[in-house]
Image (cartoon, rainbow, N blue to C red; front, top):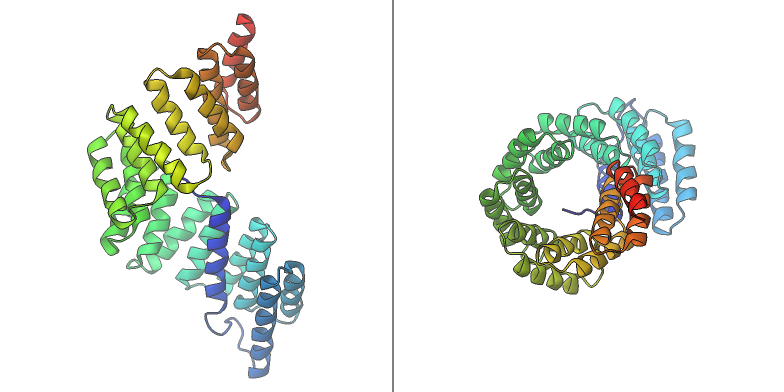
Length: 326
């Protein structure tokens, strides 16, 4: 499945805004006038964010925090502003401050986990999601977030159990069904992958994510031509190139003996790019392999060199082989 960083960040900001407006600040008791001052600062900072003036929003909140450093709502509002300023690590630090002031808030832990994930702190994200899920075991979104993070950490058995708990709590969670399908594909359990992706598509029949998983399943079931047609249709529907769709189409065409077209699609996937460095490194390595197969050695060397720069260890041996052949 793909998840754009921009979409994730916007989702975090929406979540943070919901928490920021969720009632009076906790911590030390404040007189009514002080509470009004806090609420006014948050209101003015949000207005600055809507006006795309985040630096001014940050100053408003920091000035308020100078007077009320123990207010959790102000800490969350500052975290929201720092997210807009593309400072997720600093935003996460503010969430930790807020959690210290509001220890029993499951929503706050869940939001902190999402911000930690954006900041690349996956172990901390998993910890916050787990705490939120423990605090409110009947909340399906907490189970979903925890399951997705366990999946990301490679704890497949834990992820499966948590995601199944999520869909038991809320059967309409297409993301959970899709994640279960993706996990089953990784384990080569094609029957269960088919069952789960059908559930996801029943809820969101036009989702490119679930259609991509279905196409992957078709290829694994020995139907690359049918999968390639489906992938072309997905590309046409979304109207923009997607690296993961291009990669899967390349795999299908490679199985059909159309190596030159596969190499071209891999090159396009590398050009489109991917926010995850490891995935981008793999794409460049695979592009190098396919360009070598069709005799385009110079291009293969370029892709292999880029893959090595991105941290793909297999590219070193490939470069050595290409140099020897040259």
